[in-house]
Image (cartoon, rainbow, N blue to C red; front, side, top):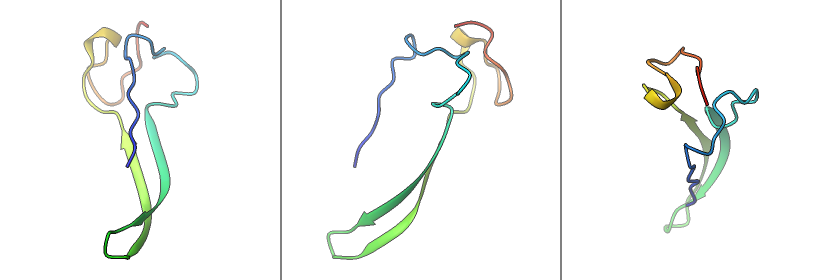
Length: 64
């Protein structure tokens, strides 16, 4: 299992690609019992974040 950590102060919320907002990744998982599964992992950043002026899901960042 892996993860990524982001320094929110270093991210540019006005970046045109918004690459850290929503991610969908195809995953293959192997269990300790020898089973294998295939599925998707989805990450979506939701909720208010005052430093960027976000009050809800459809807001656009107002500052970086």
